[in-house]
Figure 1: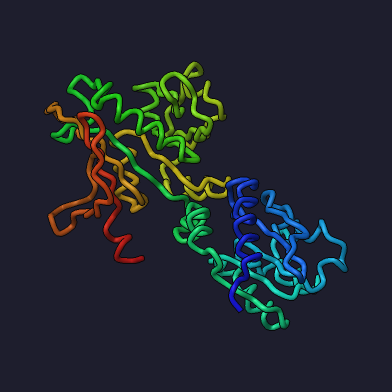
Figure 2 (figure 1 turned 45 degrees about the vertical axis):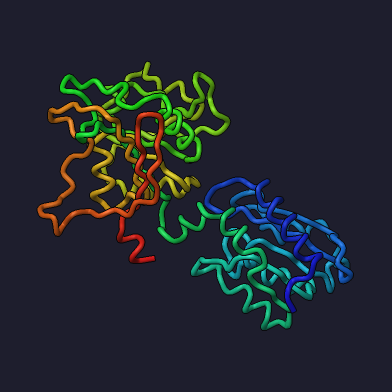
Length: 342
Protein backbone atom coordinates (compact mmCIF):
# COMPACT_ATOMS: atom_id res chain seq x y z
CA UNK A 1 0.00 0.00 0.00
CA UNK A 2 1.45 3.44 -0.90
CA UNK A 3 2.07 6.07 1.74
CA UNK A 4 -1.02 7.55 3.36
CA UNK A 5 -1.67 11.25 3.81
CA UNK A 6 -0.58 11.02 7.45
CA UNK A 7 2.62 9.29 6.41
CA UNK A 8 3.36 11.91 3.77
CA UNK A 9 2.91 14.62 6.41
CA UNK A 10 5.16 12.67 8.76
CA UNK A 11 7.86 12.43 6.09
CA UNK A 12 7.84 16.20 5.61
CA UNK A 13 8.23 16.55 9.37
CA UNK A 14 11.03 13.96 9.41
CA UNK A 15 12.93 15.82 6.69
CA UNK A 16 12.68 18.97 8.79
CA UNK A 17 13.84 17.15 11.92
CA UNK A 18 16.84 15.73 10.09
CA UNK A 19 18.31 19.21 9.72
CA UNK A 20 18.70 19.40 13.52
CA UNK A 21 21.54 16.91 13.24
CA UNK A 22 25.11 17.90 12.40
CA UNK A 23 26.60 17.57 8.94
CA UNK A 24 29.47 15.15 9.01
CA UNK A 25 30.54 11.57 8.55
CA UNK A 26 27.00 10.33 9.17
CA UNK A 27 23.92 11.47 7.25
CA UNK A 28 21.33 13.84 8.66
CA UNK A 29 18.29 11.61 9.25
CA UNK A 30 14.91 12.27 10.84
CA UNK A 31 12.16 9.90 11.99
CA UNK A 32 8.52 10.22 13.02
CA UNK A 33 6.49 7.38 14.54
CA UNK A 34 2.74 7.12 13.99
CA UNK A 35 0.18 5.15 15.97
CA UNK A 36 -2.00 2.54 14.29
CA UNK A 37 -4.57 5.31 13.76
CA UNK A 38 -2.04 7.65 12.10
CA UNK A 39 -1.33 9.99 15.03
CA UNK A 40 2.26 11.14 15.68
CA UNK A 41 3.51 9.54 18.90
CA UNK A 42 7.30 10.14 18.79
CA UNK A 43 10.01 11.76 16.74
CA UNK A 44 13.78 11.86 16.65
CA UNK A 45 16.88 12.59 14.62
CA UNK A 46 20.49 11.54 14.47
CA UNK A 47 22.52 13.71 16.83
CA UNK A 48 25.97 12.83 15.47
CA UNK A 49 28.53 10.06 15.08
CA UNK A 50 28.34 7.48 17.86
CA UNK A 51 24.88 8.53 19.05
CA UNK A 52 21.63 6.61 18.46
CA UNK A 53 20.29 6.82 14.93
CA UNK A 54 17.05 8.68 14.26
CA UNK A 55 14.81 5.61 14.59
CA UNK A 56 16.35 4.58 17.91
CA UNK A 57 16.23 8.17 19.14
CA UNK A 58 12.48 8.21 18.45
CA UNK A 59 12.01 4.77 20.02
CA UNK A 60 13.68 6.00 23.20
CA UNK A 61 10.78 8.41 23.67
CA UNK A 62 8.21 5.59 23.69
CA UNK A 63 7.32 2.94 26.20
CA UNK A 64 7.83 -0.56 24.77
CA UNK A 65 4.08 -1.16 24.48
CA UNK A 66 3.49 2.14 22.65
CA UNK A 67 5.78 1.12 19.77
CA UNK A 68 3.91 -2.13 19.14
CA UNK A 69 2.00 -1.99 15.84
CA UNK A 70 3.14 1.56 15.02
CA UNK A 71 4.58 2.98 11.78
CA UNK A 72 8.09 4.39 11.48
CA UNK A 73 8.55 7.13 8.88
CA UNK A 74 12.26 7.67 8.20
CA UNK A 75 14.19 9.78 5.69
CA UNK A 76 16.80 7.03 5.02
CA UNK A 77 16.46 3.25 4.88
CA UNK A 78 17.03 1.83 8.40
CA UNK A 79 20.59 0.56 8.62
CA UNK A 80 21.47 -3.11 8.67
CA UNK A 81 24.92 -3.21 10.24
CA UNK A 82 26.68 -3.04 13.59
CA UNK A 83 28.95 -0.04 13.93
CA UNK A 84 29.17 2.13 17.01
CA UNK A 85 25.43 1.46 17.28
CA UNK A 86 23.38 -1.63 16.45
CA UNK A 87 21.28 -2.17 13.30
CA UNK A 88 18.21 0.07 13.31
CA UNK A 89 16.25 -2.45 11.23
CA UNK A 90 16.56 -5.02 14.01
CA UNK A 91 15.68 -2.44 16.67
CA UNK A 92 12.44 -1.70 14.80
CA UNK A 93 11.65 -5.41 14.52
CA UNK A 94 12.32 -5.96 18.22
CA UNK A 95 10.03 -3.02 19.08
CA UNK A 96 7.15 -4.59 17.15
CA UNK A 97 6.91 -1.94 14.44
CA UNK A 98 4.28 -2.98 11.89
CA UNK A 99 5.18 -0.67 8.99
CA UNK A 100 8.17 1.37 7.82
CA UNK A 101 8.00 4.18 5.25
CA UNK A 102 11.33 5.60 4.11
CA UNK A 103 12.59 8.01 1.45
CA UNK A 104 16.02 6.88 0.20
CA UNK A 105 17.82 3.56 0.00
CA UNK A 106 21.00 3.47 2.06
CA UNK A 107 23.90 3.52 -0.48
CA UNK A 108 26.39 1.96 1.92
CA UNK A 109 27.73 -1.47 1.07
CA UNK A 110 27.77 -2.54 4.73
CA UNK A 111 24.80 -0.56 6.03
CA UNK A 112 22.25 -1.26 3.30
CA UNK A 113 19.75 -4.12 3.33
CA UNK A 114 17.63 -2.92 6.21
CA UNK A 115 14.47 -2.98 4.09
CA UNK A 116 15.05 -6.63 3.19
CA UNK A 117 15.59 -7.54 6.83
CA UNK A 118 12.37 -5.78 7.79
CA UNK A 119 10.36 -7.50 5.07
CA UNK A 120 11.78 -10.88 6.05
CA UNK A 121 10.49 -10.26 9.56
CA UNK A 122 6.99 -9.51 8.27
CA UNK A 123 7.16 -5.72 8.47
CA UNK A 124 5.31 -3.81 5.72
CA UNK A 125 7.85 -1.57 3.96
CA UNK A 126 7.25 1.37 1.60
CA UNK A 127 10.33 2.81 -0.12
CA UNK A 128 10.84 6.04 -2.06
CA UNK A 129 8.37 8.37 -0.33
CA UNK A 130 9.54 11.94 -1.11
CA UNK A 131 12.84 10.55 -2.36
CA UNK A 132 13.67 13.62 -4.44
CA UNK A 133 13.41 15.93 -1.42
CA UNK A 134 15.53 13.60 0.69
CA UNK A 135 18.11 13.24 -2.10
CA UNK A 136 18.42 17.01 -2.41
CA UNK A 137 18.79 17.36 1.35
CA UNK A 138 21.48 14.66 1.52
CA UNK A 139 23.21 15.55 -1.75
CA UNK A 140 26.59 16.34 -0.15
CA UNK A 141 26.63 13.18 1.96
CA UNK A 142 25.52 11.08 -1.02
CA UNK A 143 28.34 12.57 -3.11
CA UNK A 144 30.85 11.49 -0.46
CA UNK A 145 29.41 7.95 -0.53
CA UNK A 146 29.69 7.85 -4.32
CA UNK A 147 33.18 9.34 -4.53
CA UNK A 148 34.65 7.79 -1.40
CA UNK A 149 35.97 11.26 -0.46
CA UNK A 150 34.70 14.84 -0.16
CA UNK A 151 33.38 16.61 -3.23
CA UNK A 152 36.07 18.99 -4.53
CA UNK A 153 35.50 22.35 -6.22
CA UNK A 154 38.58 23.93 -7.79
CA UNK A 155 38.33 27.68 -8.35
CA UNK A 156 40.57 30.18 -10.05
CA UNK A 157 40.34 33.69 -11.49
CA UNK A 158 42.02 34.52 -14.77
CA UNK A 159 42.44 37.16 -17.43
CA UNK A 160 40.92 36.56 -20.85
CA UNK A 161 44.32 35.32 -21.99
CA UNK A 162 44.54 32.77 -19.17
CA UNK A 163 46.82 34.55 -16.71
CA UNK A 164 46.33 34.43 -12.93
CA UNK A 165 48.60 37.41 -12.24
CA UNK A 166 50.62 40.12 -13.90
CA UNK A 167 54.35 39.70 -14.53
CA UNK A 168 55.21 41.30 -11.16
CA UNK A 169 53.00 38.76 -9.35
CA UNK A 170 50.16 41.14 -8.51
CA UNK A 171 46.71 39.60 -8.86
CA UNK A 172 44.34 41.75 -6.76
CA UNK A 173 42.04 42.26 -8.37
CA UNK A 174 41.72 40.55 -11.74
CA UNK A 175 37.95 40.20 -11.34
CA UNK A 176 35.39 42.75 -10.18
CA UNK A 177 33.19 43.06 -7.07
CA UNK A 178 30.34 40.87 -8.37
CA UNK A 179 32.69 37.96 -9.01
CA UNK A 180 34.33 38.32 -5.60
CA UNK A 181 30.92 38.37 -3.91
CA UNK A 182 30.04 35.17 -5.73
CA UNK A 183 33.26 33.54 -4.53
CA UNK A 184 32.47 34.35 -0.91
CA UNK A 185 28.95 32.96 -1.28
CA UNK A 186 30.38 29.72 -2.63
CA UNK A 187 33.02 29.58 0.10
CA UNK A 188 30.22 29.66 2.65
CA UNK A 189 28.70 26.53 1.08
CA UNK A 190 31.89 24.54 1.68
CA UNK A 191 33.09 22.73 4.79
CA UNK A 192 36.76 23.41 4.10
CA UNK A 193 38.73 25.91 2.02
CA UNK A 194 42.14 24.76 0.79
CA UNK A 195 45.24 26.70 -0.26
CA UNK A 196 48.91 25.90 -0.67
CA UNK A 197 51.71 27.48 1.29
CA UNK A 198 52.72 29.43 -1.82
CA UNK A 199 49.42 31.31 -1.86
CA UNK A 200 49.51 31.71 1.91
CA UNK A 201 52.95 33.31 1.84
CA UNK A 202 52.29 35.45 -1.23
CA UNK A 203 48.80 36.79 -0.43
CA UNK A 204 48.27 36.19 3.33
CA UNK A 205 44.58 35.34 2.74
CA UNK A 206 42.10 35.24 5.61
CA UNK A 207 40.24 32.28 4.03
CA UNK A 208 36.93 33.47 5.44
CA UNK A 209 33.55 33.81 3.76
CA UNK A 210 32.40 37.43 3.97
CA UNK A 211 29.74 39.88 2.91
CA UNK A 212 31.79 43.03 2.68
CA UNK A 213 33.55 43.18 6.04
CA UNK A 214 30.98 40.98 7.78
CA UNK A 215 31.64 37.28 8.29
CA UNK A 216 28.92 35.06 6.87
CA UNK A 217 27.20 32.69 9.34
CA UNK A 218 28.93 29.56 8.02
CA UNK A 219 32.71 29.53 7.78
CA UNK A 220 34.71 26.79 6.05
CA UNK A 221 37.63 25.31 7.98
CA UNK A 222 40.91 26.67 6.53
CA UNK A 223 43.30 24.01 5.23
CA UNK A 224 46.91 24.66 4.19
CA UNK A 225 48.88 22.14 2.13
CA UNK A 226 52.66 22.35 1.84
CA UNK A 227 55.86 22.04 3.84
CA UNK A 228 56.92 25.68 4.08
CA UNK A 229 56.39 27.20 7.55
CA UNK A 230 53.48 29.57 8.13
CA UNK A 231 54.27 32.89 9.81
CA UNK A 232 52.90 33.19 13.33
CA UNK A 233 51.13 36.43 12.40
CA UNK A 234 49.47 35.02 9.24
CA UNK A 235 45.83 36.04 8.82
CA UNK A 236 44.76 32.40 8.74
CA UNK A 237 45.54 32.16 12.45
CA UNK A 238 42.76 34.68 13.11
CA UNK A 239 40.16 32.57 11.33
CA UNK A 240 37.07 31.56 13.41
CA UNK A 241 38.21 27.92 13.00
CA UNK A 242 41.66 26.61 13.82
CA UNK A 243 43.49 25.95 10.55
CA UNK A 244 44.56 22.45 9.52
CA UNK A 245 48.08 22.04 8.13
CA UNK A 246 49.16 19.16 5.89
CA UNK A 247 52.88 19.06 4.99
CA UNK A 248 52.21 16.15 2.59
CA UNK A 249 51.54 16.62 -1.12
CA UNK A 250 49.45 13.43 -1.18
CA UNK A 251 46.12 15.08 -1.99
CA UNK A 252 44.16 11.83 -1.75
CA UNK A 253 45.47 11.32 1.79
CA UNK A 254 44.46 14.87 2.71
CA UNK A 255 40.95 14.28 1.40
CA UNK A 256 40.72 10.97 3.27
CA UNK A 257 41.62 12.70 6.51
CA UNK A 258 39.17 15.53 5.88
CA UNK A 259 36.43 12.98 5.22
CA UNK A 260 37.16 11.32 8.57
CA UNK A 261 36.62 14.73 10.16
CA UNK A 262 33.19 15.05 8.56
CA UNK A 263 34.14 17.35 5.67
CA UNK A 264 31.80 16.83 2.72
CA UNK A 265 32.61 19.78 0.43
CA UNK A 266 36.09 21.15 -0.23
CA UNK A 267 36.74 24.49 -1.95
CA UNK A 268 40.24 24.75 -3.46
CA UNK A 269 41.56 28.29 -3.93
CA UNK A 270 45.25 27.58 -3.77
CA UNK A 271 46.80 29.17 -6.84
CA UNK A 272 47.98 27.59 -10.12
CA UNK A 273 50.20 24.89 -8.59
CA UNK A 274 47.62 23.46 -6.21
CA UNK A 275 44.71 23.86 -8.63
CA UNK A 276 46.69 22.02 -11.31
CA UNK A 277 47.64 19.26 -8.86
CA UNK A 278 44.00 18.58 -8.03
CA UNK A 279 43.01 18.57 -11.70
CA UNK A 280 45.94 16.34 -12.71
CA UNK A 281 45.12 13.86 -9.92
CA UNK A 282 41.53 13.59 -11.16
CA UNK A 283 40.24 15.08 -7.91
CA UNK A 284 38.40 18.12 -9.31
CA UNK A 285 34.67 17.39 -9.38
CA UNK A 286 33.59 20.96 -10.15
CA UNK A 287 35.62 23.70 -11.83
CA UNK A 288 34.88 27.40 -11.33
CA UNK A 289 36.78 29.64 -13.74
CA UNK A 290 36.18 33.37 -13.22
CA UNK A 291 37.20 35.10 -16.46
CA UNK A 292 37.91 38.84 -16.54
CA UNK A 293 37.95 40.91 -19.76
CA UNK A 294 41.57 41.97 -19.33
CA UNK A 295 44.82 40.94 -21.03
CA UNK A 296 47.97 40.44 -18.97
CA UNK A 297 50.40 38.42 -21.05
CA UNK A 298 53.49 37.00 -19.41
CA UNK A 299 54.16 33.59 -17.90
CA UNK A 300 51.89 33.53 -14.83
CA UNK A 301 49.26 31.14 -16.15
CA UNK A 302 46.11 30.21 -14.26
CA UNK A 303 47.07 26.53 -14.53
CA UNK A 304 50.46 24.86 -14.86
CA UNK A 305 51.38 21.50 -16.43
CA UNK A 306 48.44 19.07 -16.45
CA UNK A 307 50.29 16.22 -18.14
CA UNK A 308 48.59 16.93 -21.45
CA UNK A 309 50.96 16.09 -24.29
CA UNK A 310 48.52 16.33 -27.18
CA UNK A 311 44.96 17.30 -28.01
CA UNK A 312 44.01 13.64 -27.63
CA UNK A 313 45.06 13.86 -23.97
CA UNK A 314 43.09 17.05 -23.27
CA UNK A 315 41.10 17.09 -20.04
CA UNK A 316 37.69 17.86 -21.44
CA UNK A 317 34.97 19.54 -19.41
CA UNK A 318 31.22 19.69 -19.62
CA UNK A 319 29.91 23.21 -19.07
CA UNK A 320 27.09 23.33 -16.54
CA UNK A 321 26.57 27.10 -16.60
CA UNK A 322 27.88 30.37 -18.01
CA UNK A 323 27.13 33.07 -15.44
CA UNK A 324 27.69 36.81 -16.11
CA UNK A 325 28.98 38.62 -13.02
CA UNK A 326 29.30 42.32 -13.73
CA UNK A 327 31.95 42.63 -16.44
CA UNK A 328 33.25 39.12 -15.69
CA UNK A 329 32.08 35.68 -16.71
CA UNK A 330 31.96 32.52 -14.57
CA UNK A 331 32.29 29.12 -16.22
CA UNK A 332 30.92 26.30 -14.02
CA UNK A 333 32.00 22.91 -15.34
CA UNK A 334 32.79 19.33 -14.44
CA UNK A 335 35.11 16.75 -16.01
CA UNK A 336 33.29 15.02 -18.84
CA UNK A 337 34.49 11.62 -17.58
CA UNK A 338 32.25 12.04 -14.54
CA UNK A 339 29.24 12.27 -16.81
CA UNK A 340 30.32 9.21 -18.79
CA UNK A 341 30.79 7.15 -15.64
CA UNK A 342 27.64 8.23 -13.82
